Image: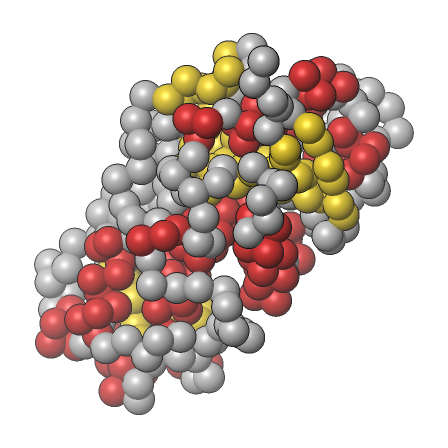
Length: 330
């Protein structure tokens, strides 16, 4: 008989650790009040999938997560994955920024062992909550050998998503998570079924490691719209190493803002054009002459993940060409 894998479940808070006053409270509840062991107690069935251990690393809503939180999670997971008695990791997490933490781990962890980040749209106390099944499915994915070597995953609504692609696309629906190219697979009664694999480099095939990484360069995000004033944009870019400009359509920049972004680039700020559409490729040298201005484009990445990729790339002092190549590779 094959021995069950050893899975560590790390709690960080979120709705999956929340509690409402009544079962009908699907949106009015206290976030991050349950400890990870209380959450695990709701799914004793998971003990048939793996030997489970748990630890409470953080206890807060993910809207509060900053670069320091990401580094703390990443370094703890990296340390755990190096142990021979751990076969995979599940991280319970608030859904607000779950795709950012997952992508950060996807780019920095150096292991083939499965890492799954999971949250819920309703607290465990709510009628028809998704918390128990999402966590059960996440453990099933982390425990299964087919999940090795494909990077960090996000599991929600019985779907398995690659951290690179997945985004939270709805503020309250249970089916809130989507990937523009579709899920990698599904979880059916505790068994993951994969139908595709990530196509972009990750984990062992990236140049970034958490070893010795004390912090991330300052990269900010500016949301573009027709009435955005140039002085407001300039203030956002003033102290940044990089700036993700979220433009209209194909990452377009209003004419009255061109000089502000060009000046930022001349000062050494790495300006990256993204799109506020939430989907699609931002094409280079189309409506904006990116090469002439020294600007970058995100390829098909969303702004919040582009911020993390640029920050990591800047830790190695990359030039413009190398930075652009990173957006097209990872």
